[in-house]
Amino acid sequence: MTTQIFQASTLYGTATLAAALDSGCFRPADRRILLVCNNAATPETTPALDEAPGFEKLRDRFDDVILYNETIFPFHPGGWAPRVDDMPLWERFLRHEWQLGDEEVELAVESIQVNPSLALAQIFTGAPVTVYADGLMSYGPTRNKIDPLVGTRVDRVLHLDLVPGLKPLLLTEFGVEGELVQTAAFTKVLAELAPAGAELPDIEEPALLLGQYLSALDILTAEQEENLHVRMLKGAAALGHTKVVFKPHPSAPARFTRLLEQEAERLKVELTVLDTPVLAEVLYQRMRPALVVGCFSTALLTAKALYGLPVARIGTEVLLEQLTPYENSNRVPVTIVDALLPALGDRGAVTEQRTGMDVDTLGALIRAVGFAMQPKIYPSLRPEAEAWLARNLNQRTMRYFKRRRLSSLALPGGVPAQLAFIPRNPTVRRMAKKARSLRNSVRR
Image (cartoon, rainbow, N blue to C red; front, side, top):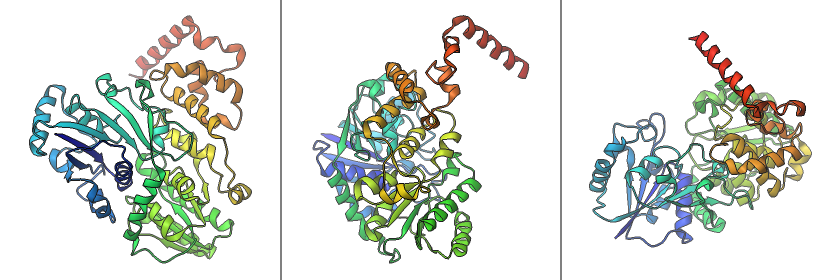
């Protein structure tokens, strides 16, 4: 007997799993469990994905739906992991609660670097693991160093073909290969979800603005995010769009739309703010937007790659500057969107839908950024990163790097050429280390 456990926290991720199952990415199993994880800051007041409109269309792919939050209550899925000594006890408990008996278990999880995915992989010791990615982060490096006892059990990274030709960097330190979920299967699943938007307003070909609630991630302040939405509206109006639909993030506060509504009135733009939680892809099918505008949302790439809709980005330059620390896992999604999609303020680029880099150049850039983000996890990428920086670093591409980070790694562009020996000099490094130690002592 074999049981497959599919861990999911979003409807989009569940749709990805459904498409993978429909296209035969998983071998037959005696039982399939959808393990729903509500990772909201306050899950008690935030509906889980199994309550989202359209979930019932995906439900029949699974034999059972289990709420992980209820199993581990009162712990939070994102903040809890069992102690090493308690893992055998937790496995026995979960096998009893989920009626697994002595069956073989196979796992399909989201972000293996963090809980709850990591906790599940550690509890079910020995279970083969499939990591599936529903966004752009899979193209970037693994954000944390993973225990080889977990990493060596990952057999593949399932991902959507959001950037055709671009290969994921995630988990390649363990030799894990990427495997595509068929685009046709995914769009078919999304077509099943389209009727879930029956209560949506009847608007055709508007400019669609995508909110992301970046202030909740401490990437922007609330004021900066409100201003970003206003810039989206102004940019769409400047391109001649008079009908605009704003899709706020489900967790964003209502006040985020007030400034936007005032600006729409001033610009004489017909603004509709959606209050129904629905996937952006449902809107693509129902409204066929004339333009999709966002910051670095994955939905920008699904609009372009899966539905052939015109897209435009805004705010990526600010985010590339403000993202901290440098190894912030959002850096690669922002880099991809900035390097690939036209800027909202560039009328010609938006009208002609001119792309930035070709996929080969973009892939080399992502590997260079990936090395700069996680040099200890991907030391083999150093020669390629050095070569790319030596050939391509200029005023335009410097936005993807930090001079201080390049200097600390002794990479091209970090310090003037005549001083390039300094970061590699052991004496200088010892003196710098001693100076930092003295500075910290004084502060204490």
